[in-house]
Length: 415
Image: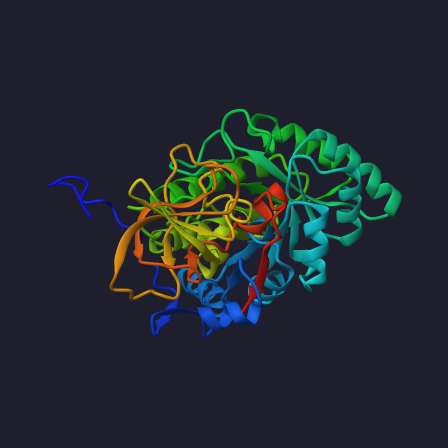
């Protein structure tokens, strides 16, 4: 389809992670229509175990063996999925007491669980110390409360300083560091925080530097990692004990929108190998950690909703489905997009459909914001067909307003 005689509309990156058999997407080896029957209802999210395992294996192959891989479970906290991931990665990063419970129930090693978040409650900090996990401290208030909790429980709190660096991850979807931020302790105050940790007898272990997320430019990630390691070296001079933990964050993105390409891991792996070698000399006890959520699970999931009506309004085709922004806020464009762009979407049971049309996919909600695909070229669909939204393994269910307008909650399955 042409925008003009000269300019082609950019295409989505190929969504070829799922096989297509007899016109249907296959998830976990099951045709989509059979999977829908097994689930028993639509809408639902489906996550493919094989794709999750393959992504971790590919990442392990691209990164140096010295680098530990942590799963940031805020991307997808479904308990069955967390159990699966806990067996594949080296550790879990949580962002609440609720997530901590899920991680521990999943069998994650408490020594390899870390807890980040700017508003940790007193109860959550007490949970963390009692569980023996690592707390990424983000304020002087947390240091004081952890000192009191440590005395009460007779356990020195394990802590790392989350740093708000004086640089940003360029080209990131969300900037988590640089400038005024609610996250972490400003870089210029880190020496002061380290002194306070030492005075309070907390078990200092290292640093957490997370500059940004959803980045598709390898050179930007490489630059941020280099700056993070340089900063950690400077801060280590003020640390009360040797650095044992160096979390460089993540930021690895996946392609959602037309024109985006998948991240090239090769330069990132080469850079981390070089950094690991230099860190062995300067910080010999330090383990490097990469913390990833979306990159590990995002491409392994789809959201599936059924067409309940086909309408034509003044020449425009609308496919009305039984689920929408209440289940998948990010695909509707209402989760941080400035200019709305389409996720990759397909008619999941008509993948090779020869009859094509331009259609908009809308949900059942009484708002024009309930839009899953805006004027996309799709296989011609009828009521009963299944719409599949790709790149839906991260920030789907838990990031959506499921109670909005009283529709039923969405189901999740791991296959």
